[in-house]
Length: 290
Image: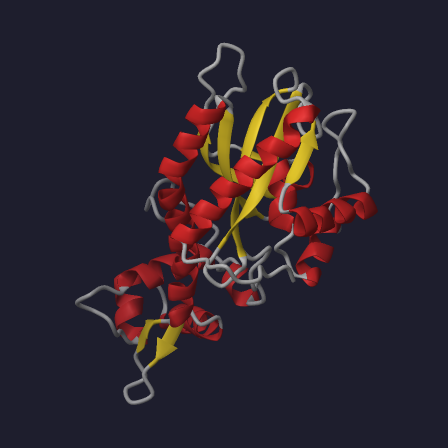
């Protein structure tokens, strides 16, 4: 499951350094903004300063390499330390990269693993059903399609890997929302929802009922809720621990995805989702919907 939000509580990390003078030199340094590195940029470059050869660095060395004041480096190092992005060696006071970066990297790796493990299965499903087949993950209020394999038919939905759609009105999005914890889901519904078609559902109570349907039935059928003339069926993909990793969906024109065929189509989509889940280490255990 991909978290809906991340911890953002370090004020210093997002403050801008005050310029030493009012004079601005154009293009003095391509990394500088208005003659001074912003704190965010400095923090990024600070972390990138560490390497295989220089796994631990002190404030003085960091300040020298970045070309900024020791006080600035110390302030940012403390902020990054609080967030777990840096660690400090108690014996010599030097800093090294923290486990928090590993945790963030694991989220990226998880997405790459899902995309890699699903490619062959999704391509096979596209060839079998001859409709668009997509793999989506949750990105705040939206879904992002990591894969979108286009239908071979003349009349088809335009494919574009990497595109985003509102999570609340897509079949894949409803499946992904089923994996959120209640505080995350509550935060999600705090944001405005704008109807895209006459069939778009924006009511929170109805959307929550649809999320419960996913937990009960294992899939969601979207009937022109995101794009007029388009229907989709999606099912969640699970990590080894039973949490939701992604969602796969089959999408096509309303004229071909008839309601009488939805149950049969849904079974095939769930089979493909379960196959991907097995590749990710998910076994025949109870799925986790929190």
